[in-house]
Length: 122
Image 1 (cartoon, rainbow, N blue to C red):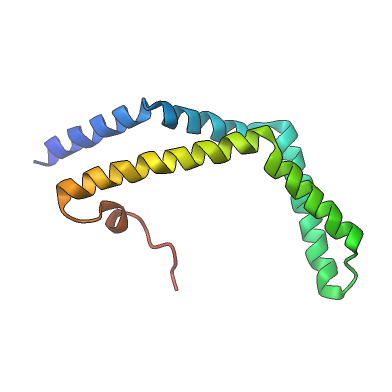
Image 2 (tube, rainbow, N blue to C red):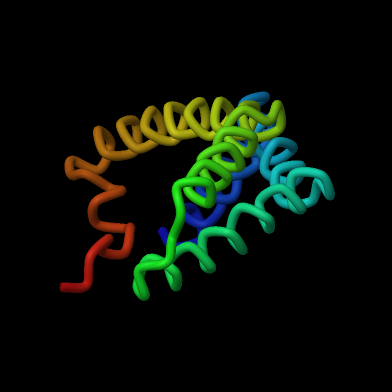
């Protein structure tokens, strides 16, 4: 039985890997994390955010600095690569939910709930 289960799992993963939405997600994910322009923009945003948190703590954060952070956040969010990544991630979640439903129906319990690690340790 274990060998049959392994073959079924391998076949499932292979079929899932050929799904166009999975391919689109992989591409979007790769671009999101490797595009130099977007990476530089995210770095500027994160660097400004770190500085702002320190300044907020000591009470020296200015409205201009907040505006800069908001502008950078908007640029990151509205970047075409970010938009494509967010869309692809939503679509892949739909695919994975459909897979979980099919597997769960066969098994008679919610597979993802049992297989996934707890989201909160506390």
